[in-house]
Length: 454
View 1 (cartoon, rainbow, N blue to C red):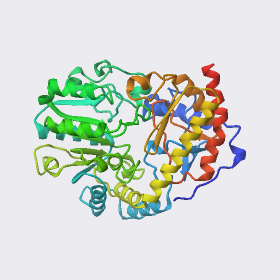
View 2 (view 1 turned 90 degrees about the horizontal axis):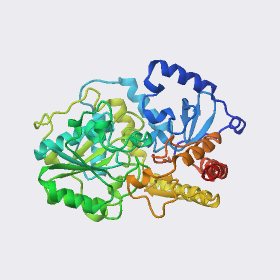
View 3 (view 1 turned 180 degrees about the vertical axis):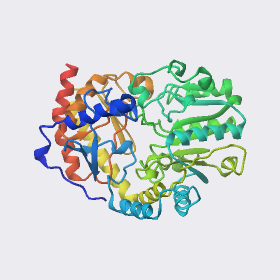
């Protein structure tokens, strides 16, 4: 576990955002929206986005000197916490040898071996982003099967690939861009004509789609446990059903573990279902944790499918910075430190904190549902009974209530995702002090949410 730094309590309240506001104004002059990824702009919650200056353990410090317990963790990658000393040391040593060669390196082979050793894939190809990984996996599936149609689920986000933005989650859900992607500027109708979007957790819809168009379907792609519409886990046996349905129709099952891979267990979501149920996906995409905070991702799968990739096969894929020696070193160090003890600690902390959130909201009379997928969880501010099982239900939540809750937590030194449609993440650095800080902030935040409900 990395060292956790406790904040100076005198600096937590009152808070100033003057420096962040200045940087945001400067950013607007040179960057669309002032950010390099839309959700960071705080459009969904309002206010000034915090420009961070540093991170250590479970804490972030912004340019105004305010400190926060971080429940975003760079949207998942910081499994061990910020600035873990052993990861930093490995990266510093790698940088001392050079930053990029454009040649094969030992560290990329070692990282690939670590991924293959933990997961159901037989071979992997390293890339630089989750978007690139899913884009390449779809191309490979089409090349392997000789088919064009791709099936995905509403609310699942697989990167900003044109054909996969159809009813996607994450930033699109946040900004209420729903329905067919041809209505999204810059994405031509032809790009999504071969994408079939189904409601998540709906077996009948999947069966009907394959019964009607099974011979055209190259692959079905799904988040292994969705976290981009809020956390909406697969119902028991759903992933197994998808794998078996694809196999029966000669299509490939692509499991997107960019978010869950090495995050919810050492084997990802597959370690929580497929490893016990006896099935394997044909292709898997990885990212986030496997890069240890650096831009690194991968896709992998059955050896016979992966052999279709160039230079062995006809499906072309390449990348100048793929397998970058600094990124692969960071990822390898992170995976080596991600022990069973780390996952047990994360699971325990996430269960405790998610329970505390639910209890405080219940005490304040705020309608809500807390849902978890492994050690990822989120809160839906909804009065609808029962679990949130698909995108339609997730979209019915009251984002205004989340906005009030978010800012009350932010004012008390807790950094939540600036969107109601994102997962909350913990790290191994979230010790008792950090968790207690979050718990202490909950009563006032629950009351702020209650005021909006009333």
